[in-house]
Image (tube, rainbow, N blue to C red; front, side, top):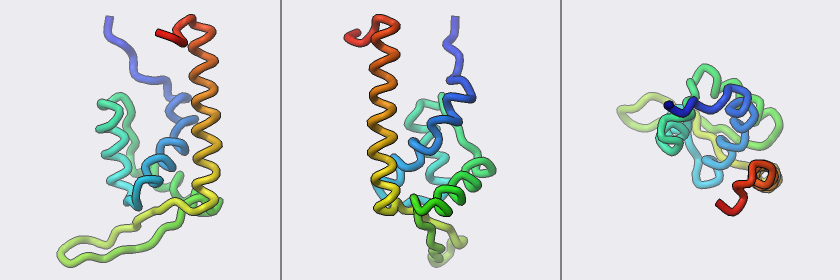
Length: 114
């Protein structure tokens, strides 16, 4: 039997963590974020720009990311997002919470040391 893709609610609940994690490495534009999530998850997770940009806008309004427009020759103008110091703090907290959650689930399932 083929494994099902992650539940929509799991994706929705982890979207912020995924985006902040990718922006921790370097500034990125929305399309790049979408491609990386799909590639790094082996296709199990996909985000469309139509859902990603409102989330980026909310993160920016909360002061967790900062966007800036970049124009390059022979390319269209793109908005690059980078992590702010507040975003780094929130990311660290979310990462710790996620790790604690995964450990707790592993203990319940009996797979923590598997």
